[in-house]
Each structure stands twice: as structure tokens, then as C-alpha cells.
Image (cartoon, rainbow, N blue to C red; front, top):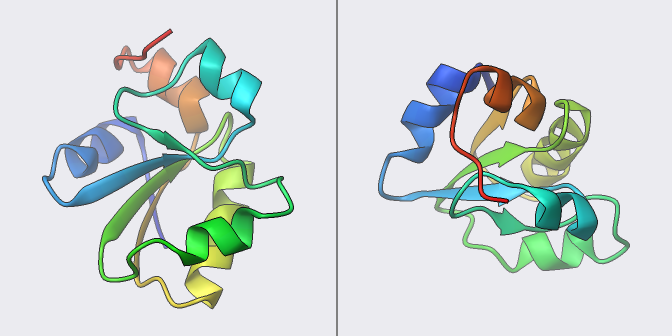
Length: 104
């Protein structure tokens, strides 16, 4: 897992083969999220089985609200074989503070 600030994360998610994951709850995601993000709630019981279905050869950029749940998600993904994982350290809070785009 590589921790990134909002600017670094923005550059990473602009790469064509990077998949953007929002690991917050569905209500949080529905309130606002980074455009093109896929929502997989790390707190749900089926998170590990759902994330296991993803292509482990791809790169994943992961964020939550403040950076804690995304670290948990990154650790789970790393344990099950994902190699290319990028974490937005300050979560969507840092993203918004940096003036980056969100969808509401």
C-alpha cells in the first residue's frame, strides 16, 4: 500500500488502468463521492468476498471519509494478494479541502 495526498491520488486515478474504490457506507457514497468511484463498503460482512472477485493484476486507488477505513481495506486486499494499492491518506475530507471534484 502506498499512501498519497490528494494531489498524488488525483494523478494516480487519472491513469487509464487504475480502478477507484470508495469503501464508505452506501449512504455516505450516495451523499457525495469522487467521480467514477465504485462503492464497496469495507464494514459489510461480504467485503472480503466481493473484493476477492476483483482482478488482482489491476491497480486500485482506495479512499474513505478520513483515511482509516481505507487503510483497513488496503490491508485486507494486500493479505488476499493485491499488489498495486494506493490509499488517499486524508480520505474524501482531504480531497474536498484540496478543491478536487466530487459528485453529489
